[in-house]
Image (tube, rainbow, N blue to C red; front, top):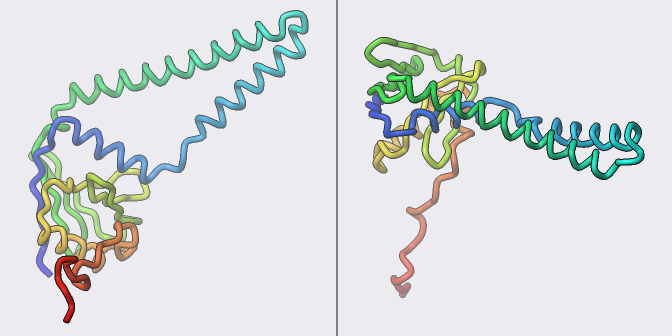
Length: 187
């Protein structure tokens, strides 16, 4: 099998979505909701035991304060991330990804990274990307918008042949060769 090479000119916001998809696929589920529930419980217990005369008002003020703090911290984090992304010229830079029997090579004008297949723990696809994931939480992404049917079939074959997980993270393919069109009649 020959190497498969992709030239990626990211569309606006595509790099951010690819990074987010890689992080989401690598990271364990967030415990943010459990932490918020714990904070609300602590506020309720504190209001009950420390302010018996004003329990309902104290509890309500505490809930609003915890919710406002959480929302403001999220907004501030998103703002900082957006600022970094706007200032990062590399996010819009043309780059390349090449798959070979040896591994995955990703490069641009100033970086050339080569990873053997054993460095990846899985390859997954979502609605927008094929994601090549490493345990460290980074990896490479190939946008599906670059693929025609033939190239996508070749990519899937190589992932199954070369990736450590043999492509178990790929979406199922439709079996379209075994069905007849509905307007055909059988004799």
